[in-house]
Image (cartoon, rainbow, N blue to C red):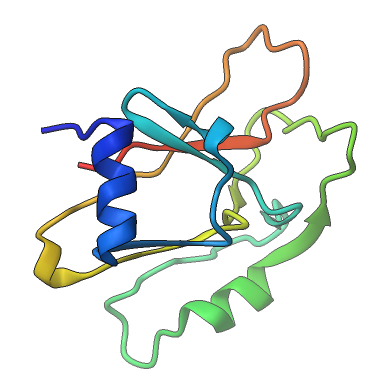
Length: 128
């Protein structure tokens, strides 16, 4: 089931969902809350031959991998063009927390078409 904007706001008021900082009312549409992309992303290096990402490996630490295999990139106000074949790791400015007692799940997905007038800077996250 996809929740409506009113249901999402009700769950926020009840504390079953938390979004910090709180999005403005304009960020809500009928079934989603628009979140914003943090301007600092991590771009994976293309010159890392033999790089194997295995979360099941003994001693695996995601933060070590991120530091050793990526470089920080700051997106300027005018945007940033993602080169074809580039893998990036990105976060939203907002932190979303779900109370397990609320029995609510969420999905965060990027939204942008190939013919955007400006580079994508928003992430859409319908709450399910």
